[in-house]
Length: 457
Image (cartoon, rainbow, N blue to C red; front, side, top):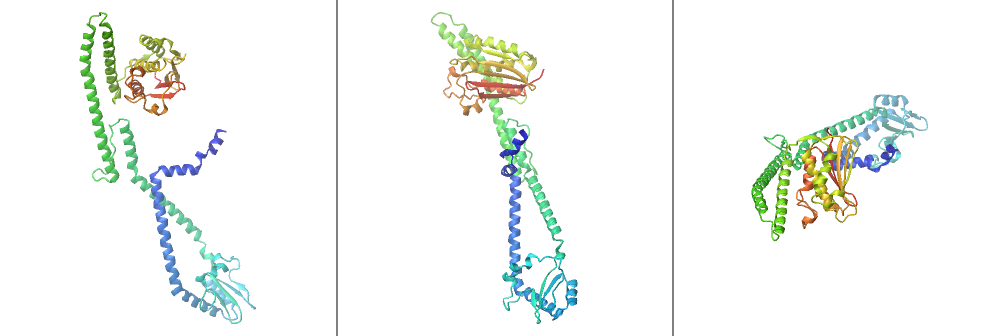
Protein backbone atom coordinates (compact mmCIF):
# COMPACT_ATOMS: atom_id res chain seq x y z
CA UNK A 1 0.00 0.00 0.00
CA UNK A 2 2.85 2.39 0.73
CA UNK A 3 4.31 1.83 -2.71
CA UNK A 4 0.93 2.47 -4.33
CA UNK A 5 0.41 5.70 -2.44
CA UNK A 6 3.85 6.88 -3.37
CA UNK A 7 3.16 6.17 -7.04
CA UNK A 8 -0.03 8.19 -6.89
CA UNK A 9 1.59 11.04 -4.99
CA UNK A 10 1.46 14.13 -7.25
CA UNK A 11 4.84 15.27 -5.93
CA UNK A 12 6.38 12.09 -7.41
CA UNK A 13 4.97 12.63 -10.91
CA UNK A 14 7.66 12.67 -13.55
CA UNK A 15 6.61 16.02 -14.98
CA UNK A 16 6.81 17.62 -11.52
CA UNK A 17 10.26 16.15 -10.94
CA UNK A 18 11.39 17.30 -14.37
CA UNK A 19 10.02 20.80 -13.79
CA UNK A 20 11.75 20.95 -10.41
CA UNK A 21 15.03 19.73 -11.90
CA UNK A 22 14.89 22.34 -14.68
CA UNK A 23 13.97 25.08 -12.23
CA UNK A 24 16.89 24.30 -9.90
CA UNK A 25 19.60 23.44 -12.44
CA UNK A 26 21.40 26.17 -14.29
CA UNK A 27 23.18 23.57 -16.45
CA UNK A 28 19.94 22.10 -17.82
CA UNK A 29 18.46 25.53 -18.47
CA UNK A 30 21.54 26.65 -20.39
CA UNK A 31 21.50 23.50 -22.53
CA UNK A 32 17.78 24.02 -23.21
CA UNK A 33 18.45 27.63 -24.21
CA UNK A 34 21.22 26.52 -26.57
CA UNK A 35 18.98 23.83 -28.06
CA UNK A 36 16.09 26.27 -28.53
CA UNK A 37 18.47 28.75 -30.16
CA UNK A 38 19.85 26.04 -32.46
CA UNK A 39 16.35 24.91 -33.46
CA UNK A 40 15.25 28.49 -34.09
CA UNK A 41 18.32 29.16 -36.24
CA UNK A 42 17.83 25.88 -38.13
CA UNK A 43 14.13 26.57 -38.77
CA UNK A 44 14.86 30.11 -39.89
CA UNK A 45 17.68 28.96 -42.17
CA UNK A 46 15.69 26.09 -43.66
CA UNK A 47 12.69 28.35 -44.18
CA UNK A 48 14.84 30.86 -45.99
CA UNK A 49 16.48 28.15 -48.09
CA UNK A 50 13.10 26.63 -48.92
CA UNK A 51 11.80 30.01 -49.98
CA UNK A 52 14.87 30.60 -52.13
CA UNK A 53 14.56 27.16 -53.70
CA UNK A 54 10.86 27.77 -54.37
CA UNK A 55 11.65 31.01 -56.16
CA UNK A 56 14.43 29.34 -58.17
CA UNK A 57 12.12 26.44 -58.91
CA UNK A 58 9.48 28.68 -60.43
CA UNK A 59 11.98 30.63 -62.49
CA UNK A 60 14.43 27.97 -63.67
CA UNK A 61 13.95 24.34 -62.60
CA UNK A 62 10.23 24.06 -63.32
CA UNK A 63 10.43 24.89 -67.04
CA UNK A 64 13.28 22.41 -67.42
CA UNK A 65 11.28 19.68 -65.66
CA UNK A 66 8.21 20.37 -67.79
CA UNK A 67 10.32 20.15 -70.97
CA UNK A 68 11.87 16.87 -69.76
CA UNK A 69 8.41 15.41 -69.00
CA UNK A 70 7.28 16.43 -72.49
CA UNK A 71 10.26 14.61 -74.03
CA UNK A 72 9.56 11.47 -71.98
CA UNK A 73 5.91 11.57 -73.09
CA UNK A 74 6.98 11.90 -76.71
CA UNK A 75 9.38 8.98 -76.23
CA UNK A 76 6.54 6.77 -74.95
CA UNK A 77 4.59 7.59 -78.10
CA UNK A 78 0.92 7.70 -79.08
CA UNK A 79 -0.66 5.28 -78.62
CA UNK A 80 1.61 4.64 -75.59
CA UNK A 81 4.15 1.84 -75.87
CA UNK A 82 4.29 -0.28 -72.74
CA UNK A 83 7.78 -1.51 -73.65
CA UNK A 84 9.13 2.03 -73.90
CA UNK A 85 7.37 3.06 -70.70
CA UNK A 86 8.84 0.03 -68.90
CA UNK A 87 12.32 0.92 -70.20
CA UNK A 88 11.98 4.46 -68.84
CA UNK A 89 10.78 3.12 -65.42
CA UNK A 90 13.75 0.74 -65.33
CA UNK A 91 16.24 3.46 -66.30
CA UNK A 92 14.96 6.30 -64.07
CA UNK A 93 13.69 6.35 -60.42
CA UNK A 94 10.19 7.22 -61.59
CA UNK A 95 6.76 5.59 -61.72
CA UNK A 96 4.43 5.66 -64.71
CA UNK A 97 0.68 5.27 -64.84
CA UNK A 98 -1.16 5.16 -68.19
CA UNK A 99 -4.95 5.39 -68.40
CA UNK A 100 -6.86 5.49 -71.65
CA UNK A 101 -9.12 3.79 -74.15
CA UNK A 102 -6.52 1.24 -75.29
CA UNK A 103 -3.79 1.02 -72.63
CA UNK A 104 -4.22 0.82 -68.83
CA UNK A 105 -0.89 0.09 -67.23
CA UNK A 106 1.19 0.98 -64.13
CA UNK A 107 4.91 0.46 -63.74
CA UNK A 108 4.67 -0.13 -59.96
CA UNK A 109 1.12 -1.30 -59.20
CA UNK A 110 2.12 -2.60 -55.75
CA UNK A 111 3.04 0.86 -54.50
CA UNK A 112 0.25 3.03 -53.01
CA UNK A 113 -0.07 6.54 -54.26
CA UNK A 114 2.10 8.79 -52.02
CA UNK A 115 0.61 11.78 -50.23
CA UNK A 116 2.50 14.27 -52.35
CA UNK A 117 0.82 12.79 -55.46
CA UNK A 118 -2.72 13.27 -54.11
CA UNK A 119 -5.12 15.65 -55.80
CA UNK A 120 -5.09 17.99 -52.81
CA UNK A 121 -1.32 18.31 -52.89
CA UNK A 122 -1.11 18.69 -56.65
CA UNK A 123 -3.72 21.41 -56.63
CA UNK A 124 -1.30 23.65 -54.73
CA UNK A 125 -0.06 26.66 -56.62
CA UNK A 126 3.52 25.55 -57.07
CA UNK A 127 2.40 22.29 -58.78
CA UNK A 128 -0.07 23.93 -61.21
CA UNK A 129 0.86 25.19 -64.65
CA UNK A 130 -0.76 28.58 -64.77
CA UNK A 131 0.15 29.13 -68.42
CA UNK A 132 -1.78 26.27 -70.06
CA UNK A 133 -3.52 24.61 -67.12
CA UNK A 134 -1.79 21.26 -67.46
CA UNK A 135 -0.46 19.31 -64.47
CA UNK A 136 3.27 19.46 -64.02
CA UNK A 137 3.71 15.67 -64.00
CA UNK A 138 0.65 14.71 -66.03
CA UNK A 139 0.32 14.65 -69.82
CA UNK A 140 -2.43 13.73 -72.30
CA UNK A 141 -1.51 12.13 -75.64
CA UNK A 142 -3.21 12.86 -78.94
CA UNK A 143 -5.24 9.65 -78.77
CA UNK A 144 -6.68 10.47 -75.35
CA UNK A 145 -4.35 8.53 -73.00
CA UNK A 146 -3.34 10.13 -69.66
CA UNK A 147 0.25 9.58 -68.59
CA UNK A 148 1.20 10.42 -65.01
CA UNK A 149 4.77 10.52 -63.78
CA UNK A 150 5.92 10.14 -60.14
CA UNK A 151 8.97 9.37 -58.00
CA UNK A 152 9.71 5.76 -57.15
CA UNK A 153 9.12 5.34 -53.39
CA UNK A 154 11.54 2.40 -53.24
CA UNK A 155 14.40 4.80 -53.87
CA UNK A 156 13.45 6.54 -50.62
CA UNK A 157 13.51 3.50 -48.40
CA UNK A 158 16.72 4.73 -46.73
CA UNK A 159 14.94 7.77 -45.35
CA UNK A 160 14.00 6.16 -41.98
CA UNK A 161 17.60 5.18 -41.36
CA UNK A 162 18.74 8.69 -42.22
CA UNK A 163 16.12 10.13 -39.88
CA UNK A 164 17.16 7.86 -37.01
CA UNK A 165 20.80 8.65 -37.66
CA UNK A 166 20.06 12.35 -37.63
CA UNK A 167 18.18 11.99 -34.33
CA UNK A 168 21.06 10.01 -32.82
CA UNK A 169 23.56 12.69 -33.85
CA UNK A 170 21.29 15.38 -32.41
CA UNK A 171 21.03 13.55 -29.08
CA UNK A 172 24.78 13.01 -29.03
CA UNK A 173 25.42 16.69 -29.67
CA UNK A 174 22.96 17.57 -26.90
CA UNK A 175 24.74 15.25 -24.48
CA UNK A 176 28.11 16.72 -25.44
CA UNK A 177 26.72 20.23 -24.97
CA UNK A 178 25.42 19.31 -21.49
CA UNK A 179 28.77 17.77 -20.50
CA UNK A 180 30.64 20.84 -21.72
CA UNK A 181 28.29 23.26 -19.95
CA UNK A 182 28.52 21.12 -16.82
CA UNK A 183 32.32 21.36 -17.03
CA UNK A 184 32.19 25.11 -17.51
CA UNK A 185 29.90 25.63 -14.51
CA UNK A 186 31.57 23.15 -12.19
CA UNK A 187 33.27 26.01 -10.28
CA UNK A 188 29.77 27.00 -9.12
CA UNK A 189 29.61 23.76 -7.10
CA UNK A 190 32.98 24.58 -5.51
CA UNK A 191 31.79 28.11 -4.74
CA UNK A 192 28.58 26.80 -3.15
CA UNK A 193 30.48 24.27 -1.02
CA UNK A 194 33.01 26.92 0.01
CA UNK A 195 30.27 29.38 0.96
CA UNK A 196 28.65 26.68 3.12
CA UNK A 197 31.98 25.99 4.84
CA UNK A 198 32.50 29.69 5.49
CA UNK A 199 28.97 29.96 6.86
CA UNK A 200 29.72 27.08 9.26
CA UNK A 201 32.85 28.84 10.45
CA UNK A 202 35.34 26.58 8.65
CA UNK A 203 37.88 28.78 6.90
CA UNK A 204 40.68 26.20 6.68
CA UNK A 205 40.02 25.24 3.05
CA UNK A 206 39.76 27.93 0.39
CA UNK A 207 37.63 27.67 -2.72
CA UNK A 208 39.73 26.26 -5.60
CA UNK A 209 40.29 28.77 -8.41
CA UNK A 210 40.47 27.24 -11.87
CA UNK A 211 43.30 28.66 -14.02
CA UNK A 212 44.50 30.86 -11.16
CA UNK A 213 47.14 32.50 -13.39
CA UNK A 214 44.43 33.64 -15.80
CA UNK A 215 41.01 33.07 -14.22
CA UNK A 216 37.71 33.49 -16.01
CA UNK A 217 34.64 35.21 -14.50
CA UNK A 218 33.85 32.27 -12.22
CA UNK A 219 37.47 32.06 -11.14
CA UNK A 220 37.45 35.75 -10.30
CA UNK A 221 34.25 35.23 -8.29
CA UNK A 222 35.87 32.36 -6.35
CA UNK A 223 38.97 34.48 -5.64
CA UNK A 224 36.76 37.34 -4.43
CA UNK A 225 34.82 35.04 -2.09
CA UNK A 226 38.11 33.63 -0.76
CA UNK A 227 39.26 37.15 0.02
CA UNK A 228 35.96 37.87 1.75
CA UNK A 229 36.30 34.64 3.75
CA UNK A 230 39.81 35.61 4.87
CA UNK A 231 38.57 39.02 5.97
CA UNK A 232 35.68 37.49 7.92
CA UNK A 233 38.01 34.95 9.50
CA UNK A 234 40.39 37.69 10.61
CA UNK A 235 37.52 39.73 12.08
CA UNK A 236 36.19 36.71 13.96
CA UNK A 237 39.64 35.87 15.30
CA UNK A 238 40.14 39.49 16.35
CA UNK A 239 36.76 39.48 18.09
CA UNK A 240 37.58 36.21 19.85
CA UNK A 241 40.99 37.45 20.95
CA UNK A 242 39.50 40.71 22.25
CA UNK A 243 36.75 38.85 24.11
CA UNK A 244 39.20 36.43 25.70
CA UNK A 245 41.55 39.23 26.69
CA UNK A 246 38.75 41.27 28.24
CA UNK A 247 37.40 38.25 30.10
CA UNK A 248 40.80 37.39 31.54
CA UNK A 249 41.51 40.98 32.49
CA UNK A 250 38.13 41.37 34.21
CA UNK A 251 38.66 38.36 36.44
CA UNK A 252 41.30 40.03 38.59
CA UNK A 253 39.34 43.21 39.48
CA UNK A 254 36.20 41.10 40.05
CA UNK A 255 38.10 38.86 42.43
CA UNK A 256 39.43 41.89 44.35
CA UNK A 257 35.96 43.46 44.45
CA UNK A 258 34.46 40.23 45.80
CA UNK A 259 37.19 39.97 48.45
CA UNK A 260 36.66 43.58 49.53
CA UNK A 261 32.89 43.01 49.68
CA UNK A 262 33.28 39.92 51.87
CA UNK A 263 35.48 41.97 54.26
CA UNK A 264 32.66 44.44 54.88
CA UNK A 265 31.18 44.24 58.37
CA UNK A 266 28.03 42.15 58.67
CA UNK A 267 26.10 44.82 60.50
CA UNK A 268 22.36 45.20 60.01
CA UNK A 269 22.66 48.40 57.95
CA UNK A 270 25.24 46.89 55.55
CA UNK A 271 24.26 43.24 55.18
CA UNK A 272 21.52 43.85 52.57
CA UNK A 273 23.81 45.90 50.30
CA UNK A 274 26.63 43.39 50.93
CA UNK A 275 24.50 40.43 49.79
CA UNK A 276 23.20 42.32 46.72
CA UNK A 277 26.76 43.27 45.75
CA UNK A 278 28.00 39.69 46.20
CA UNK A 279 25.10 38.42 44.07
CA UNK A 280 25.88 40.90 41.26
CA UNK A 281 29.57 40.07 41.40
CA UNK A 282 28.72 36.36 41.20
CA UNK A 283 26.59 36.94 38.13
CA UNK A 284 29.39 38.90 36.46
CA UNK A 285 31.86 36.12 37.27
CA UNK A 286 29.43 33.54 35.85
CA UNK A 287 29.01 35.60 32.69
CA UNK A 288 32.77 35.80 32.20
CA UNK A 289 33.07 32.05 32.76
CA UNK A 290 30.36 31.40 30.17
CA UNK A 291 32.07 33.70 27.68
CA UNK A 292 35.40 31.94 28.09
CA UNK A 293 33.73 28.54 27.80
CA UNK A 294 31.85 29.56 24.66
CA UNK A 295 35.03 30.75 22.99
CA UNK A 296 36.82 27.51 23.89
CA UNK A 297 33.98 25.42 22.48
CA UNK A 298 33.60 27.59 19.37
CA UNK A 299 37.21 26.92 18.38
CA UNK A 300 38.01 24.47 15.62
CA UNK A 301 39.57 22.00 18.05
CA UNK A 302 37.41 21.90 21.17
CA UNK A 303 39.20 19.80 23.80
CA UNK A 304 36.89 17.29 25.49
CA UNK A 305 37.81 15.23 28.56
CA UNK A 306 35.68 12.15 27.97
CA UNK A 307 35.05 9.75 30.81
CA UNK A 308 32.50 7.07 31.60
CA UNK A 309 29.50 8.98 32.89
CA UNK A 310 26.34 7.83 34.61
CA UNK A 311 23.81 10.32 33.23
CA UNK A 312 21.18 9.41 35.82
CA UNK A 313 23.56 10.15 38.69
CA UNK A 314 24.76 13.34 37.00
CA UNK A 315 21.18 14.54 36.50
CA UNK A 316 20.38 14.01 40.20
CA UNK A 317 23.51 15.92 41.22
CA UNK A 318 22.54 18.90 39.04
CA UNK A 319 18.98 18.88 40.39
CA UNK A 320 20.35 18.93 43.96
CA UNK A 321 22.65 21.86 43.11
CA UNK A 322 19.77 23.83 41.60
CA UNK A 323 17.72 23.24 44.76
CA UNK A 324 19.88 25.84 46.53
CA UNK A 325 18.71 28.64 44.18
CA UNK A 326 15.32 27.37 42.98
CA UNK A 327 12.72 26.11 45.40
CA UNK A 328 10.96 24.23 42.58
CA UNK A 329 14.03 22.19 41.61
CA UNK A 330 13.00 19.39 43.95
CA UNK A 331 9.79 18.92 41.97
CA UNK A 332 11.56 18.24 38.64
CA UNK A 333 10.23 14.97 37.19
CA UNK A 334 13.21 12.80 36.28
CA UNK A 335 12.59 9.97 33.76
CA UNK A 336 15.63 7.80 33.02
CA UNK A 337 15.66 4.73 30.79
CA UNK A 338 16.17 1.52 32.75
CA UNK A 339 18.80 0.15 30.35
CA UNK A 340 20.86 3.36 30.34
CA UNK A 341 24.57 2.38 30.14
CA UNK A 342 27.64 4.40 31.01
CA UNK A 343 28.48 6.90 28.28
CA UNK A 344 31.85 8.38 27.29
CA UNK A 345 31.18 12.12 27.62
CA UNK A 346 32.78 15.26 28.97
CA UNK A 347 31.22 15.22 32.42
CA UNK A 348 31.83 18.89 33.24
CA UNK A 349 30.38 20.06 29.89
CA UNK A 350 27.31 17.81 30.30
CA UNK A 351 26.84 19.22 33.79
CA UNK A 352 26.84 22.68 32.20
CA UNK A 353 24.21 21.56 29.66
CA UNK A 354 21.92 20.08 32.31
CA UNK A 355 22.30 23.10 34.58
CA UNK A 356 21.48 25.57 31.80
CA UNK A 357 18.50 23.60 30.47
CA UNK A 358 16.99 22.97 33.89
CA UNK A 359 17.62 26.52 35.07
CA UNK A 360 15.94 27.85 31.94
CA UNK A 361 12.93 25.56 32.43
CA UNK A 362 12.57 26.57 36.10
CA UNK A 363 12.52 30.25 35.13
CA UNK A 364 9.47 29.64 32.92
CA UNK A 365 7.60 27.26 35.22
CA UNK A 366 6.72 29.61 38.09
CA UNK A 367 3.13 30.04 36.91
CA UNK A 368 2.75 26.58 35.36
CA UNK A 369 0.62 23.88 36.92
CA UNK A 370 3.18 21.10 36.28
CA UNK A 371 6.92 21.03 37.13
CA UNK A 372 9.63 20.63 34.46
CA UNK A 373 10.43 17.16 33.10
CA UNK A 374 13.87 15.68 32.41
CA UNK A 375 14.00 12.63 30.12
CA UNK A 376 17.15 10.61 29.40
CA UNK A 377 16.73 8.00 26.66
CA UNK A 378 18.88 5.74 24.48
CA UNK A 379 17.82 4.94 20.93
CA UNK A 380 19.53 4.23 17.59
CA UNK A 381 23.06 4.51 19.03
CA UNK A 382 22.32 7.97 20.44
CA UNK A 383 21.66 9.42 23.87
CA UNK A 384 18.80 11.93 24.09
CA UNK A 385 18.58 14.40 26.98
CA UNK A 386 15.27 16.27 26.82
CA UNK A 387 14.08 19.00 29.20
CA UNK A 388 10.52 20.25 28.94
CA UNK A 389 8.70 22.94 30.86
CA UNK A 390 4.96 23.66 30.94
CA UNK A 391 5.15 27.43 30.60
CA UNK A 392 3.89 29.69 27.85
CA UNK A 393 6.40 28.48 25.23
CA UNK A 394 8.21 30.60 22.65
CA UNK A 395 6.73 32.35 19.59
CA UNK A 396 7.52 30.22 16.47
CA UNK A 397 9.48 33.02 14.79
CA UNK A 398 11.99 33.00 17.69
CA UNK A 399 12.70 29.24 17.71
CA UNK A 400 15.40 29.23 14.97
CA UNK A 401 17.35 31.95 16.83
CA UNK A 402 17.19 30.75 20.44
CA UNK A 403 20.56 28.98 20.28
CA UNK A 404 22.38 32.06 18.97
CA UNK A 405 24.74 33.96 21.24
CA UNK A 406 23.11 36.78 23.25
CA UNK A 407 19.71 36.21 21.63
CA UNK A 408 16.63 36.53 23.81
CA UNK A 409 12.96 36.70 22.81
CA UNK A 410 12.46 39.16 25.67
CA UNK A 411 13.92 42.37 24.23
CA UNK A 412 13.63 44.07 27.63
CA UNK A 413 16.24 41.57 28.96
CA UNK A 414 14.84 41.36 32.46
CA UNK A 415 16.79 39.19 34.84
CA UNK A 416 13.56 37.61 36.08
CA UNK A 417 12.77 36.16 32.65
CA UNK A 418 16.21 34.89 31.67
CA UNK A 419 19.95 35.46 31.52
CA UNK A 420 22.02 37.21 28.89
CA UNK A 421 21.33 34.69 26.12
CA UNK A 422 24.33 32.36 26.43
CA UNK A 423 22.71 29.29 28.04
CA UNK A 424 21.23 27.60 24.97
CA UNK A 425 24.18 28.81 22.89
CA UNK A 426 26.56 26.93 25.20
CA UNK A 427 24.31 23.86 25.06
CA UNK A 428 24.48 23.87 21.26
CA UNK A 429 28.28 24.23 21.31
CA UNK A 430 28.66 21.34 23.78
CA UNK A 431 26.37 19.14 21.65
CA UNK A 432 28.31 19.96 18.48
CA UNK A 433 31.65 19.36 20.22
CA UNK A 434 30.41 15.83 21.03
CA UNK A 435 29.24 15.36 17.43
CA UNK A 436 25.58 15.80 18.34
CA UNK A 437 22.76 18.29 17.81
CA UNK A 438 20.40 20.55 19.73
CA UNK A 439 16.68 20.48 18.88
CA UNK A 440 13.97 22.82 20.15
CA UNK A 441 10.22 22.74 19.69
CA UNK A 442 7.06 24.10 21.26
CA UNK A 443 5.53 21.26 23.28
CA UNK A 444 2.19 23.07 23.72
CA UNK A 445 2.27 23.93 26.48
CA UNK A 446 5.85 24.83 27.18
CA UNK A 447 9.18 24.47 25.41
CA UNK A 448 11.03 21.20 24.79
CA UNK A 449 14.82 21.25 24.31
CA UNK A 450 16.62 18.03 23.42
CA UNK A 451 20.35 17.35 23.16
CA UNK A 452 21.08 14.36 20.89
CA UNK A 453 24.55 12.86 21.38
CA UNK A 454 26.11 9.89 19.55
CA UNK A 455 26.41 6.90 21.82
CA UNK A 456 29.90 5.83 22.86
CA UNK A 457 30.57 3.67 25.85
